[in-house]
Image (tube, rainbow, N blue to C red; front, side, top):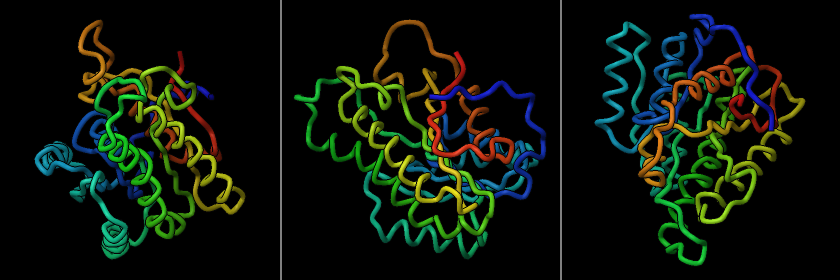
Length: 249
């Protein structure tokens, strides 16, 4: 694991002219990342399940006088191969390329021993946390390669780097996510095509975390993790690839 280095405040034009797709953009880390990327010049594609939440993120970006984002509603838990193909075709038609892809969406119902994980929860968790990440990256790869300096960031978790009891299907999916990152990065390394890394954002005060932690001290907002994602999506983090990043401390 590698800590995200302490860096000076990002330039306001860090992502100027870049097109960035963020999953889970209606809430939590995805929303914070989308807003921050927009403030630093990116044109956002906001992907998520709930249109009302995506529209709220959209409205905040537009109200700030930033580049108008695109909204792409998609339920990753039920998305098909054809859905991802249509998404890639839409991005090709509207933007012609993709410079950044932040996989912030995640599925987590709560802590449980593996022996009690319900089949539906197992399938949905792997669908959202792993299969959707693969399928979306796979279909967007030609667009990412057109960028010449594209970055893909997979949001991981400490439970995907060291097994821990009761992490359930969520922990298993995050372990697989790390392997997926390493495979993509190794296949693309040296080609000057696409950088692929993971980020463990640590505890954050999000609706997802509150499903597992209903008591105790509140976690910090996702602002610091969003800043780390901004750095990884931008040119300042080049040539980092195939790296499991975490927040310092």
